[in-house]
Amino acid sequence: MEFRGLTGGIYRLTEWIMRLSGTNLLWVICSVPFLFILYMRLAIDPQYVNEAVTLNWALGILAPVTLFPATSAMFTVTRKWVMGEPDVKIIRTFFKGYKENYKQSLVGGLFYTLLFVVMYVDITVYMVQFRNMQLFGILMLILMILLFVSLFNFFSMVTHYHMKIGGILKNAILLTLLRPFRVFSTLLGAIAVIYICFTYMPVLIVIFAGSVIAWFAFFNFYATFTKMQEQAKKREEAQNADQESEIIELGKEKKEK
Image (cartoon, rainbow, N blue to C red; front, side, top):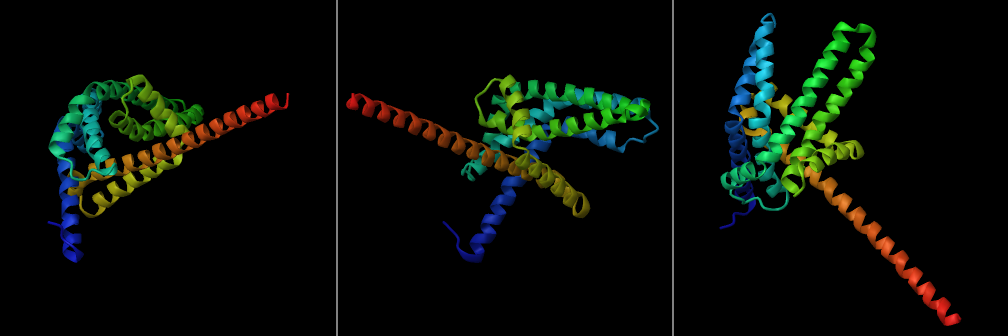
């Protein structure tokens, strides 16, 4: 039965609320160990340095095995929505994506976590201990932001391509550098969502924030992917047209002879 008018609009709105909240809650449940340690790390008093370091190590260990696979599973669901399948079964799709992409998400999580740790240490050293080398610290910070932004492309590619993890990591970073507008608009959108949630209703972070950001991230990625496909098709057609014209010219030359 299809509702029309105001009733139909309200019905569709409630459907999307259920989809977004259901997907986000699944992501939270699968990321609970990481999110719990993250909460403890943010809440700890700055004077407890040793405890903070221990929690940082725990976050680094837990991120690849919990956060990354859960986020890939969430992107699996939002990919279906963007590609025109809004009525997909959320729980089944989520855990299917979780299982299928777990290994690649784990390896990608180890790669990103290791790089983030190295960059964080470098930034701390250059900005705090070697004040005369703060320029290197700023450069490292810029690279760290680019690496973070490439995560949006990484999760989108894990769920969208059948590709080896090395190719996914390389292309995620390359796409960020070559097509920065879309991915940085995703970053700004994510910041806006988190700011609104923290400012007006923090509980929305648990209910909506992750799935909304994932949907927007894959939407931007898919728009970039589609545009690149169209450009490649046009180049191929132009190349074929050039080859056809060369064949025609050769045919004319033979006839003249």
